Image (tube, rainbow, N blue to C red; front, top):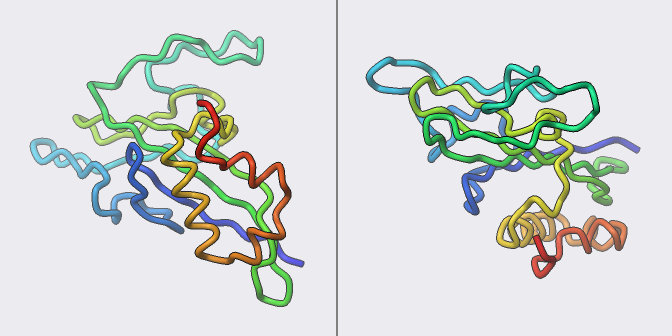
Length: 165
């Protein structure tokens, strides 16, 4: 058995692409600032406290600060990492989602995680909009309905578009 991963990228409720590591190649993602030529900089997964948008460093209590500040009116993006498993080269099931929310500063082109949970891709599934959950569900079913059927009930229910956010 092998692990399988896929990354989905949303701008608002619009699914921009999948399986991407270089967001600058995705149509619709904030492009470099034409006046400064600054490229888009995305923080790495598990980024540092300095990668948080308008956040003060954590107090060590394990909880991210509650104040969130917009970065120059930046655009919000969501990345979702879907984990699954494959057997004999065929996708067999999905078992978890890693979710992060980012803001892209339109001036510098730098992206910032919205919280420590986002930097760790551990935002709760309920932080996704119902449209995003429906898009993920339909994308996964379209990729492999067998893998969707083999997924746990808890995983499938977490992507129910009718869940309250």
